[in-house]
Length: 332
Image 1 (cartoon, rainbow, N blue to C red):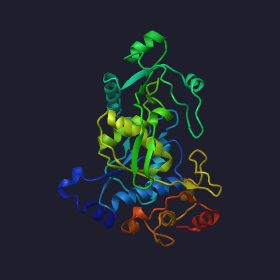
Image 2 (image 1 turned 90 degrees about the vertical axis):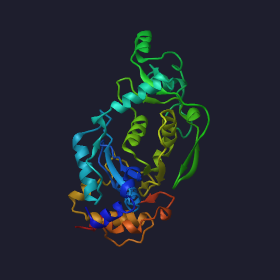
Image 3 (image 1 turned 180 degrees about the vertical axis):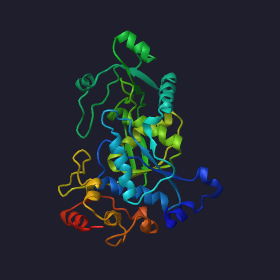
Image 4 (image 1 turned 45 degrees about the horizontal axis):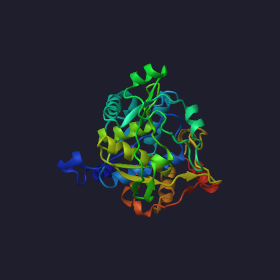
């Protein structure tokens, strides 16, 4: 542990550590981490550690089809290469899903969720997405038909997933960077899945339950996930869980304005490591993109005290060719 990091973590926590703020790093092992991920994780770490907050590392590996152990190991190496640390051992989300099972059963028993036998094709055919929507709105076909999954499966002869009941009306999300935003989940998305027919738990439910049981009080992530905050707000209300301090930061985009894609392997950190790039150059680039006066090379710990969320730019960060060339030329 870097002494400066340790001092900042300990400052002001004392006997009240159990109630101290807690941030998290929550990568998904479905692809390689790239420079956009590096920036978001650095910002989350700086924001937490600069105020003496704790940080946990949670590997979000519930996607059975795409998550791979070797990718999980690689992302831990990538984060450590950047100079980031966390409290305790990495938490593998798939290791203990009992709290997720309990949450689904609570929602079903309370009439706040219901079994759904609709297929994706049926939902798409019934409700095409409007302009700007990433998915069709669920029209409520199965709402009110059954109380339990067994009942739904016996009546329909089909496997059943579970959808959460979304009340009508807008949700107001107060975000430290994006400002106050309003979302109407009922009108835009409808009742959304929290457990699939094969038993897999949806991201929205998993992140809400696991944040709460770990004591996470602040969530800093890319602003592409800002609409998810509204869905998570509904689940937190239904399950009587606290709302975290939301901080959604603008993404890194390429020269054409496209967000960097994990699946395309854009500037993967593993590739930069293999090329011998100095991680301090990556850290310094991320710091400058966050409005800090950083040198060409600096460690994450060296920039802790300079971090200020208020200085963060409110527009996407463009990663242009000169920046890339400088990074690739910065050998350790």
